[in-house]
Image 1: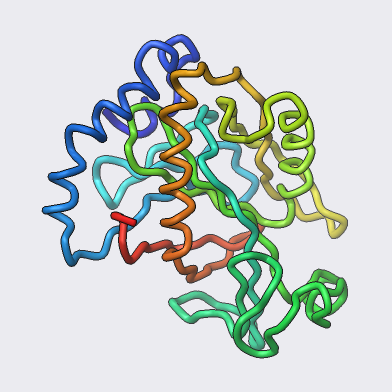
Image 2: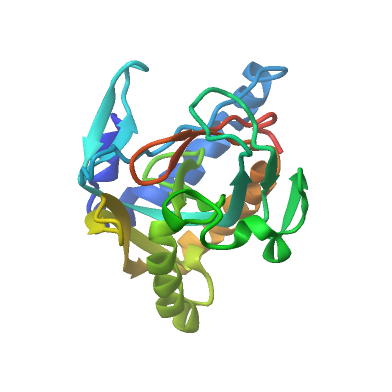
Length: 252
């Protein structure tokens, strides 16, 4: 089944088959995955956002050269973490790592390195158009219906405030973002410079059942372990940076 079809599954379908099917499928194929992927470099698929203020997500298609567009989808947030990247020279694409990067949003590695909140490049006005020279992102590992591996959605500064507000609504009642099914959509916004961009809108669709939580918790731990092996090579678009993501060991 194509990713786009999976992304548009209804809540009822998720209740009947989605998360529990993921667990059943994982049990059936994990030995085969371990054998077949031994020594190979695994790649996590990404959910991307088109440039130009478009309001449809791009999912990988069955053909690697083609993508499928989806207006909205629902998934469980297995794990999420902050990131930062600073380039001395303007980034123009390619696989160049940042001069200074942080995978926890707190401590940078490289030049200048050190504590991020004390860094001069974490100040507005040090980058283009009054922005910060060091770019902030949030990387989300999402489990969609009938999937056994997470997909990655990485969001820039423009979506961070909305994500924070969403967590503040969810956490007091459910204690964790992986305890609910989250609905994702895209909306247009305009920055202070008059540039139209796209940001992610988050909405809680429903709480997970106790049976689903039992499935999700070990998957969240797995996603957290995998996240430590994921690097970032960043490209730019009109609203933020896109990422190419690889993992060095999917069996962590």
